[in-house]
Length: 453
Image (cartoon, rainbow, N blue to C red; front, side, top):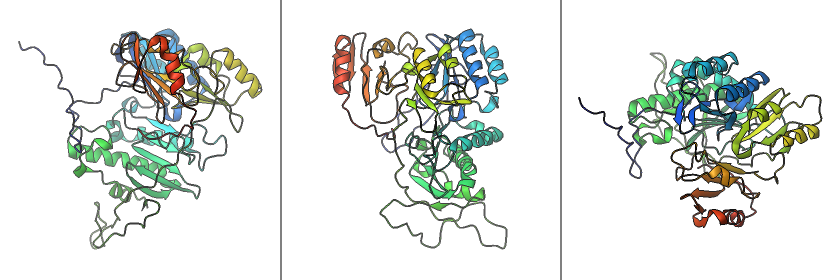
């Protein structure tokens, strides 16, 4: 009997070549649990990071009764449970489904939707994209083909302030002040109406699936497609009945399309002129603004950070009562509705639970991967070492290995473990005993300006 062969590693592309994925996407989900050093891991997709009070209680109960008692917030505003037993899958699924956290078991890993966390609360955006997120989630779950998207495919909905627009979305919607929407698809963009925004996002995702199937390279995201298999974005929008205008770079004349213009399928009825769609042109830069600072937000909502990106079940419950909470890509939580207490009283109570309520508090802006002992690849217990990181205006991320899991987007200090007692701080070697001073020296007081990685 032949021994089983190990899986072939993914082919590393040459510069300019598309990546070839020779295996399916193994990204964990709520039903597909990942085996880590500290037990099974479940990742719950939470569109726009939104949780109702009932769902907060369910998530806290799942962490306490099935996991290690903690909830991790991911860089996409999703939630992770760790330390799960091998045989807890059915019980976890039932608990989540009863709380409304599994609206479609076939689509649970593709509900990756990040939206401006304070949209609709502070009056600073141009549209309440939190409502778009709910509509898009429902549309995704209702479309059978959307279940074929990888667990890494990302939708980003920005209300125009530029807080989440730079997060590297595969399909991004950016609200405009004139009621229009910029649909951003990598280097391509279209201007369309807000009424068509969600339908356009779904049409774009399905166009990617068409291109990925034709390319046959197992692409998980559009940037992995070969150049000669770019999705027919314009044709997909036209087929969906959406009127969209290609957008040009600022400072340049819009590209004029010579005749004959490209004709996209499907064409119109026999005997009538075919649908003609102008080719898209490069998009303008995305807006960019920093994430909110911990404290009381304009409009009265609260914003707090989870220490090192993790909440205990008690800390999660301490966020209640609330109309809802919204997990953010910056490992924080927006608390909507403060009950009968004043905002200041609520903040003081949350601080007593160990949550970060001030931008100058210890741990603010510090993120970290799982580290040892939870991850077999980690070279150090980076979570313990990150606890001593000094506060500063520039974020800092601790990585236990060169993969850099969970790092935030934008300008940051990179702290990389190279052994039990050795680190690189932005490429400069240092020891564990000198780590705090090295991080403090690297934290130059500059404004945080996110950019796409």
